[in-house]
Every structure is written in structure tokens, then in C-alpha cells.
Image 1 (spheres, rainbow over the protein chains, first blue to last red):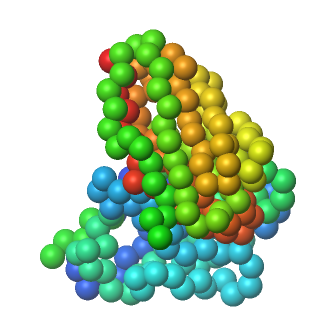
Image 2: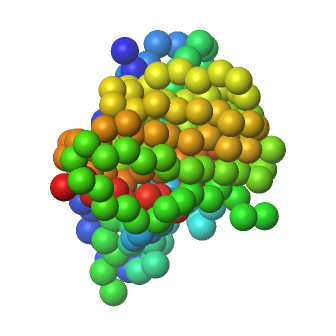
Length: 114
Length: 113
């Protein structure tokens, strides 16, 4: 069965420092991996995805993520955090064949301190 | 483009009442989804529709029914609401169910007393 783990409920980082939000997955075959962000009282917004190819994926708002097949990880990163990056971040995985079902992680709350 | 719209935004029901949550998208997407979001549990898929005319169960379908009315609209019905269905419900759509990212509506906050 496929699954996604976000091991940290909350990540605190000072403004201007690099940030990392962790995600590990379990899926048969080569996964499709996604990151979404949710601001208060809003729906989720797509940030970036990994389908195939270059392991480093760049997305919206200066975010990037690195696919590591050996560690089954897809960590979200940003070189310099902004206070406006404070939000809830979700990792999601989909197996590449068959089902249309996406599995979402439980979310990580990012707090960027001024 | 409005993207994905949901109605209502808020709803309070009594146990046993029924209601339908409406969702529409104007992006000509083939696939649509219903999720519920509960604290500490992330998003869980209730039902999805890979394309017009098809629907399938997700992770937590019990107590819900869906209708893919046409390509634009995908409704979620609670026939007899229970307190355990208190949640925030999100509708989403994607071009297809494959490599494509999902676009989410603003959500419906439902409380069942």
C-alpha cells in the first residue's frame, strides 16, 4: 500500500534562513510526488511536482524539492525563508499505474519568525 | 476563470439530516475529487471521478454518495449526517488523474451536532 510520512508537525525557522520540510514515501514503482501549501481558511495550492527526470524540481515562490529514490524522500526546500511562507505544507504521492488515488501526508506547519 | 467553486462555505446540520455539497470547475478538467480534512489526519479521499460518467470510492466513502452531473460538476451527498462527519470538505479537479496536479476549491466547513 502506498503511504506518505511528514515526520514533523511543525518547523520553525528564522526569516532569511534556509528551510526544509521533510517527506518520505512508500509506493510500488516510480512515484509521482507533489507538494501543496495551504494558507489559513483556504484550499490547497500546488507548489511543485516530480514525475521523472531531474531529481531537483523547482516550483512556485522560490521553493524546490529533491527526489531521492534510495532514501524514498522528497524534501521541500527554500534557500531563504520569508514570513509570508508561514503556512501548512502537504506532501502527496500517487502510484504511476492504475488507481487515480492520491495519498496526502498529515501536513507540516511552517512558522517563519521575523 | 473562477477555478473550482464550492457551495456552501459553512453549514451546520443536526444528526440525521441530509445535505448536498456542490462543486463546479471551469477549467475543462476530466478528473474531480472530494476530500475531507481533519486535524492531524491530513486530507483523505472520499470519492473521485476519473472522467465524466465514472465515480469510484476513495479511502473513506462510508456515509457519502457522489454524482458527476456533467464534466463541470461533482456533488457530494450526506444522506444521514453523523457527528463523525464534522470536517472541512474540499473539492479538487485535475486535467486527468495521472501526472497532473490538482486544483482545490475554498472548502466547506461542516458541523454536525
